[in-house]
Amino acid sequence: MNKLLVFQLTVQSSYVENVEREAEENCFDTVQWWFSENETWRIKTFAIDRDIHTHRIAGPVAEQVAMENTMKHYEDVVAKAFAVEFEDLADETEVAKVMEDLGGASSLEISKNGNQFAFWNPSRLKYTSKSRPT
Image 1 (cartoon, rainbow, N blue to C red):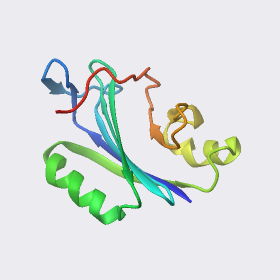
Image 2 (cartoon, rainbow, N blue to C red):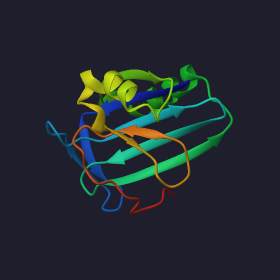
Image 3 (cartoon, one colour):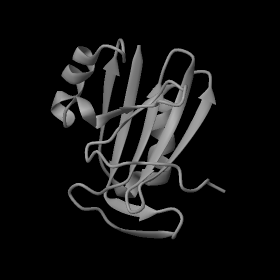
């Protein structure tokens, strides 16, 4: 079982430029958590420059811990939060069904670099790593 926990933020920002402004309908930052059997990923998207930070955590992390950590740092800018589960990411029909209410199947980006995680991308922006957290 794979689970995605998403926090949509009320801001859009740039990590590189160190700027933040109010989110727009289709332009907002996110903090996301991907939970699989053997590992957990934290994914942060920065909408202004389409930057993405991914952090692999070896071993499972409790969903409650991820929620508490995110709220500790972002509570004042969380617009909404939701979670979705997937049995098989390779099953396009299942992915489409799960994502239907959140913008359609193509709004789930599945990593193509050998790591097995996914993130919600409802605006279908092209995210790439442009910076590294310090």
